[in-house]
Image 1 (cartoon, rainbow, N blue to C red):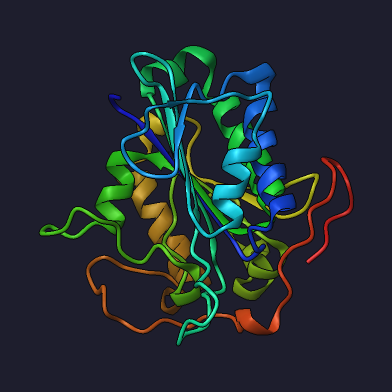
Image 2: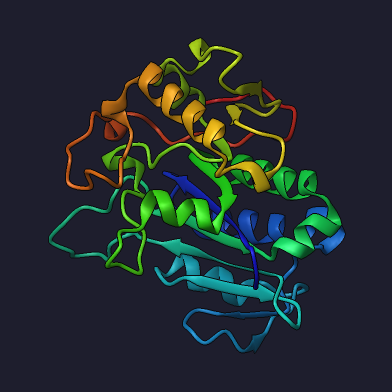
Length: 265
């Protein structure tokens, strides 16, 4: 893919069979199947044909502690992975709060053709379905600049348990996280803040992802971080800095309501 967009969703909902079914079904059904995979696997490489009429096998992958990797198109224009970070029974360490982690990529040219609003709507809907506390949608270039060190191929600071990963083109916050950082106080001239009908908030810094690396956009994001508390946000310049975080373990994971329903935490 070229000029791709990156999606990340971080949820504390355990990937039981019922939750796995909800997430995979939502992926397949969105937009009359525009994101529905044609290939899937629990490991790389992704080669196995995906049958949307029988998703029992990928459900078992996720519920048993494995992952669900998928892709669509030839050449590929949608790909992603649902990661189950739950530790196996008998592990010496407890499972992390954010054990349900979903990443995705969208080809930039394809996204522009179908309309960026549809990609944004997809991420918003999957934010609801997963019951995530934090989500993001931005360009791969923006994500790498904010979460990838010069000598690394992996992202740093991506787990909300250790701090909010950053601010990007489009950001999604649960009610609990939004209240904890005081999101409603962000000045209107810095970013667009929108209440989601099914619960949570969307914070957006520019209309097009093409502008998300513009100096004025980056300055607005920095201003928002300073306003909300820089000690709560990951900064790639200081990757080992300890951040302030909510007490995630004391909070139940977000309940999932039908679109337009009353949100719960």
